[in-house]
Length: 261
Image (cartoon, rainbow, N blue to C red; front, side, top):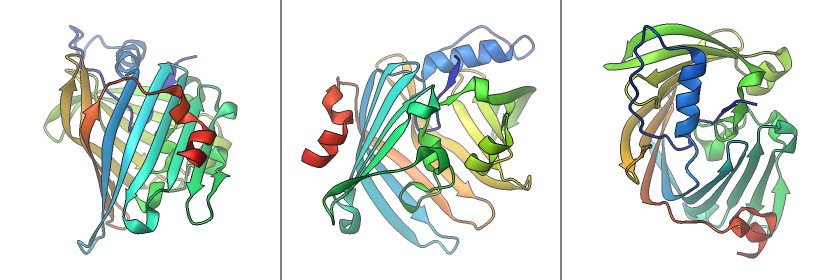
């Protein structure tokens, strides 16, 4: 089963001699797929929540990601700021077989772990930001229709443009999206942009990579990402710092770790 990772996964820098004239969807996704499996990555995640009036709130967490294979990935977020969410934890274990996906949230106020239903969390927003939980859940290509629309210029960058839509009405309802427009940079296959269209076919959100750095001599990792809600003017800027590629223990990605850490 072919696999597409969500927007917050890691991106490999790989220069290939494929021109826009002879690229195919399979070639494009094979290069993108090869770019998103970094075995271990730890980072400080800062999210600025910016209202249409320019008011700013900030959330900060330590984030851990482990990709055991193309079909097995885990993400852990341990929140540090503001005080109102300090010690809150979110654990997402996701697989190509979406029925196996699990998401747990540790609530420090009651000192318990609550399971979140991933099947219906597509419209749920990550800690009040413009990023949805769906953005952190890997998706199978088999569940989507893709249409290659050629090479375009997006914000000055040459990109391959691909229209993507869930195959079933149920999936579209869960995601609360009719389709997405994805933009992969020609020179390194980074998913540089994504436009989200709601069930009425109206543009609702724009995702853009603002900065990326080379890690480990081979991974081009996005360190600043903006998600903007076009309909209400709210936007979220996600920034990653203090990045490490050191091995993370498997025990971090367990319900027990959330409870006992």
